[in-house]
Amino acid sequence: MIEQQAIIKMIFGFKAKYLRQQQQLSLEELAERAGLSKSYLHDIEKGKKYPKVDKINAMAQALGVDYDFMVSTRASKKLQPIIDLLTSDFVKEFPLELFGISPDKLFELFSNTPDKVNAFISTLFKITRNYQMQREHLYLAALRSYQDMYDNYFEDVERAVREFRTAFQLKAPLPYTPPFLEQLLRSHFGVKTDRRAMPREKELKRQRSFYSPAHKTLFLNEGLSSAQENFLLGRELAFQYLRFAERPYFTRIVEADSFERLLNNFKASYFSVALLMDEQRMVDDIRAFAQRTSWKPEAFLHLLDQYDVTPEMLLQRLTNLLPYHFGIKDLFFIRMVGDESLQDFQMTKELHLSQLHNPYANELSEHYCRRWVSVNIIKKVKSNQQLNNDTAPAADAQISRYWETPNRYLCISVAKPDFQNPARGTSVTIGLLVNDTLRQLFRFLDSPELPTRIVNTTCERCNISNCEARAAAPAVLEQQRKQERIMLAGKRLGEGSV
Image 1 (cartoon, one colour):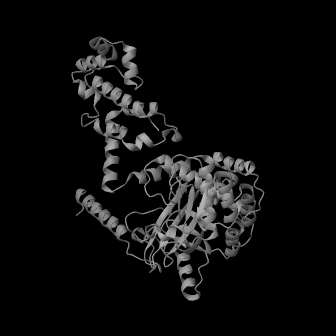
Image 2: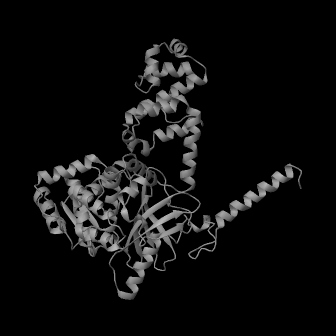
Image 3: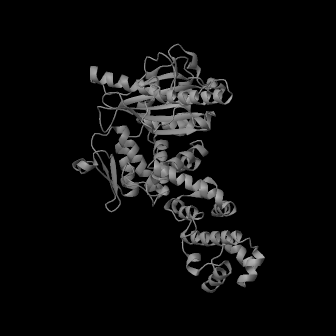
């Protein structure tokens, strides 16, 4: 994060350099006019120094502007977007160093090509305004990029989990249980748990937990499975052990008002999952499962019981370990929610490693392809629920071959009734690009139990003819074809062939 004082220096230096260049003055000429040394002006323009009042007056006079203009955050139309960005909460709070960007590099970029950078920033501002993008959208996108940079494997958190186990001599066999994790919280950190108070608050129905620092109490909501409680208790252990000051207190972040808070929440969640699914043991279990010669959904579901974790936790753990331990880096993770009528499906979470894989979220209210295993597994869970009153999770897999592309993905999906609204269904899916590396690990890729389906992204953009699962007409595709016909007609007219 960039400190406020550094931002003030950057803005002043940025304006000074821009004004000097607009008047085609060299550093030597400005130094002579203002009665200041060239080296001193150089440090000012680099954002390293902030001059005193008398020197600001001298510079303002030399540049033909007033004192107030030099020290304010107002500027010309060409400069204002950059200054607005520098003074925004996003720049103040965003940890640029995580992405290898120092304040010096950022300032150099802005000051060397201000007109081009200004046009780019103006475009970003207009896009975010037009699409009603909030600060948390940018933070979430940045977090996903951060995960991608490190292949979603974070050695510092994995090491912290190992040190935690050693420090507290955790010799209890997996799976851990809620009473065991509660005892750790109480005995080592003085944190109590309360399951009675939170269900009485109707406004907190969609929240699973709340931590009160004043009372050192973790409040848990009703209706949680032991796997869900395990995650919440493990997450609170992470917050306490890692001593994160910036942290959310609800399970769902009500307002992502800082990137640090969002990042710490991610690290605490990662810690919890790693604590519940020991790294080396999981690696051995992944290898054993992958060596099966046929796809068996019950074998995959057995991992949920073996560690007493939720489907999302299990698949997220796979996204940590497959890239680091097995070299499988081309993958995606998505979470889908289907409504009560099974007509509307929303992608509520996604992660892409190595590239932007299909499928990806679409914010234009288009209909996701109904051939996805992510969609059909929700339908299966809903059917089991209606016919047999069965609320157990279900698993399925398929090879998804994307229409008119060479890409094929092994997609493994698990679904269950939604926690907040059991009438809806939720699925989580991991997709692994089929290549030589994947074939070397997963022996069941060619088994007859694993179907292959041609899929696309959304119905509105799909030209698969006679699709039995189509939920909407290919409207976007038809509009593109109309534009192509118009262009072709214009070309014929220009060539005189009409």
